[in-house]
Length: 204
Image 1: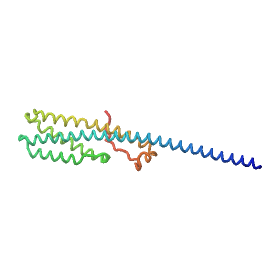
Image 2 (image 1 turned 180 degrees about the horizontal axis):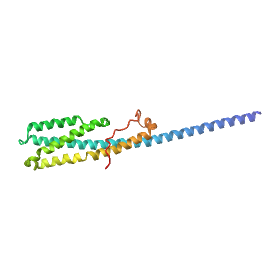
Image 3 (image 1 turned 30 degrees about the vertical axis):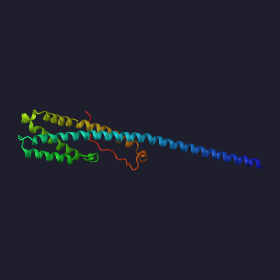
Image 4 (image 1 turned 90 degrees about the vertical axis):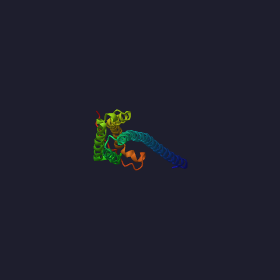
């Protein structure tokens, strides 16, 4: 092979190598961009689901707080009324305090017995507190009494609705986790694929 042909051959190899490397670089860059775009999109969806879950939980918790506050105010009214048995009202007050202590969290939601215990204690307490003054016409005719009783009843009627709304969002969240398991570490480091527990309220 002559010198000129050797030079041309060498240049060809160099050009071919550079072209191959450039092509690989382009593919790598394209792959990285695709992964980043996919991660960004999934992260946005993930954060929206998290925000929706937190909002649904806070709305539910806030309404439960209002119900318990109304029960407390109602007991205080009865405690200040001499027509009621003071010890009986104090006993109901202690049960209300106990109800606050056994309230469930998003983590304890996984234990259905915790929910059952809270619901049983809450329902029985509400029934007793609302039933207690029914034989006292003067007390029942007060505007404050009527307002508080209505507040407790309406809040209690919303329990199933708010739990259902939470379950709907939590189910979407869990489906997202199932479908995007391989991306989770990119979305949130150390996520582990943990799903959210549900109330499992059936839609009417």
